[in-house]
Amino acid sequence: MNISIVIPLFNEEESLPELTRWIQRVMTDNGFSYEIIFVNDGSTDRSQDVVHTLAAADPNIHSISFARNYGKSPALNEGFRKAQGDVVITMDADLQDSPDEIPELYRMITSEGYDLVSGWKKKRYDPLSKTIPTKLFNATARRVSGIKNLHDFNCGLKAYRRDVVKHIEVYGDMHRYIPYLAKNAGYKKIGEKVVQHQARKYGHTKFGLDRFVNGYLDLATLWFQSGFGVKPMHLFGLLGTLMFVVGFLAVMAVLILKMVSICNDSYSFFVTNSVYFYLSLACMVMGLQFFLTGFIGELITRNSPERNNYLIAEEF
Image (tube, rainbow, N blue to C red):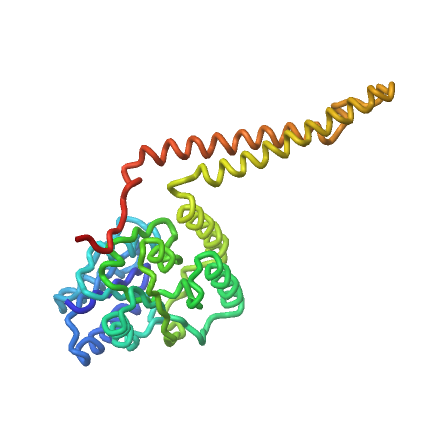
């Protein structure tokens, strides 16, 4: 099979028939063998009934339906699990992603050898309240991930080699960072294609400004996991040692001040009146906590069944 198209959806009953016809036309015109996998993320409208009707008319249509709303990342993860195509395409169900982009995305994967190609909606039809935070978010993601050539990490329109989606796990809200997940799994040929952004035709956006706050928190989590996930002591042990050293130096400063006071026959200096005393206590306690956190993290990591899970590129 040439292409699997994974489409997460939540309350998109109006757009599904039009989107399906559009995909079918593109697949037929290009002679692709394909499957469409709709992942219904706990819709409360008639979306699943519409999917049933579409699947009855086209055996290439499949469906996964969650019992409740879990989010886009779990929906993509389940769609990836089911996908059988040589190239896996993801797109949103709201008609803002154009299926006409699929042939070129497919060509970039199969002919140019990309592991992943991400869409870039260079010209957007979103309000400034959405576009400006998006630019800031993408700039931060580029710097942290090291994937300098991507302008739009969160674009729903992406293409993957099948191996990529089978070797990454998308959970929580990590769909924003799939290129970063792929890079950490060893798939480093990541490209970008400028794609058309369609104005929303039906319904309303499902995302609020809180996704940008959560996005930064997820990015921090992913950065930690990629750099220190199997060696937490390297981070927490270093921080703990530095904090403990600062605390120790503060204690020494307090003792020196006390000794100077005694040598001058002055007993006006009280240790508990010095800011260094409280700084030393705080730093030494925090340093010990950081160190113990790293130690416990190491114990957990060394007992994890995934600690020696490696992606082998080649073996003779």
